[in-house]
Figure 1 (cartoon, rainbow, N blue to C red):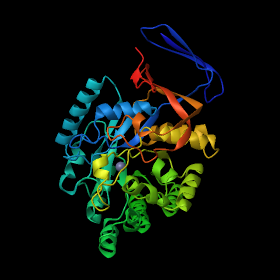
Figure 2 (cartoon, protein in one colour; figure 1 turned 90 degrees about the vertical axis):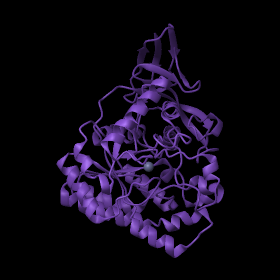
Figure 3 (tube, helix red, strand yellow; figure 1 turned 30 degrees about the vertical axis):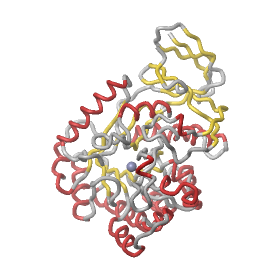
Figure 4 (cartoon, rainbow, N blue to C red; figure 1 turned 135 degrees about the horizontal axis):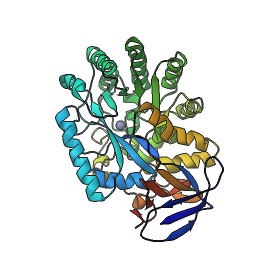
Length: 411
Ligand SMILES: [Zn+2]
């Protein structure tokens, strides 16, 4: 039995927690705080089709290292997860890899909306997180660019009581701007090509459709002040519109291209410092419901290609919690808010079997984000070099204690 004695909790009462183990060990945890383990509602573990970037063995290890015990994986794979057949095949590989890793990570999958396979949405009987729509092209081939198809997705979602989770960037605006701006060599142009108007226009359309079909819509990785404003208004009208943002949109801005180039290129792109401030305000007043890492790893070789060839996406599952705890130590966020953003609200939006996984953190631990310490297969982070205060020490998954420093479960 491993016993954590004298742990701080959010209710300010001290707790003693015990977990089964071969050893009899008592850990003085009086300097540590227990929080609910995170659910990361937005990851790309790249299986099937791109296991050179990540797989579920490295992904699960990265998750536990970041205090995450449950992930929701996106369907833009090769082949995409947009038919029943592909959904079942994907689950089979994931279960095999988690078994090989001996990590019983909890997970849910999104089902991809594809114009040629919309009928399949009606045939999914098992538990899925929801239907994922790409309104603008991103990594992979999933795309719903026609309004008529988007309408169909909303109709199906309403009939089958599924949430529609959306990558909201308007494809027409994106392609027009790409044409107008020509062949850019500067990674900073990424934010100009994928201009904020593409995101704002897509969110306007989604709110209109959510209203028309009385549907539940989850707008992923919002990045601008204007999107936050539109969603705030929709919520005030009582609509079932939910919003996610990401750590990179909260803690990086378009000023970071100068130092990091394509290593901070993702979709939607980085915005202005005033947008970062607006996102924090939207977190504060409850407009933003969740924070997902949008963990989207690519290899260094892929990212080292010139702008235009380098793919969009950054890893992030290991740094969500340290970044948020660091923001907490700076007075920008409360611990209660972090818990709502990374666990409670996601449980309310996407139906998960409830569990009592937790993460034990040290709010005083100061450490730099170092590429060498990361467990993600890609081995780099856009936050590398940042000095952060507040780190996870143990992650408890289904009563098994994972020691972050050693990167393994205690026996
Ligand atoms: Zn994503």
